[in-house]
Length: 322
Image (cartoon, rainbow, N blue to C red; front, top):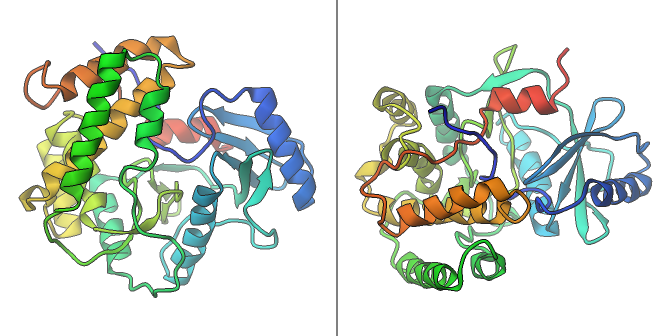
């Protein structure tokens, strides 16, 4: 059976429960503040709200000001560090606060494809090798964020399931305090998947989805690719070998992998549960993911986890073909 696809893995935009009319009001107010014509064309409303504006601009609506600030600061640091990335519009003071949200404005991307495993690995290696100064205001990684609050707010799960998840978060927090030593902490992407590293037609490799940039263990960025192989079966052994060769290290050989894997698996479960609030067909997926996490579906890899859309599919939805 062909796997379904959906994009729950990013936490960079508005909540999926936000109504289109609400998001347009947020965008309209931000455009007025920034002096930009608000002739919006909605591109996506799900985990994020993205709008194409006139003159090749993209507006992105964020739930949290901190995430929006991180994306803007991080993009400029990447530019100064000679790492290609999506870039905010330079002549607008950003982020722009609007109706309890934050809006950022970006230059529209040309057509692109998803990065190969080798391109992803090589890009992460370059990122992790870049020195950063103590005044870089990205903040330290928070691997859990407001997970407890989100779990309590999820109504598609029963009380017993929410209690189990809260206990699981508490146990992971305790384990995080004893994270095994690894490479020196550096600037990390925070959600390093092939959807976050793209390649344009002229061969440029760019980072995008910068809302989770932070200073943290570089191994954090390696875990998604390893998890795709070992937990989810979304990639092949050959593809994973290409990734590790390009990066120069296999995170599966690091004792801290299992903790970071467990944290990421938890975020994928809660992402599906949150989506089920407004998309009822995700309820079964959320319950299945939770069942896997609890050990009720046998050993990894677990079949049946819906995949996020490939970067090329997202491009078809949100990028104007030229």
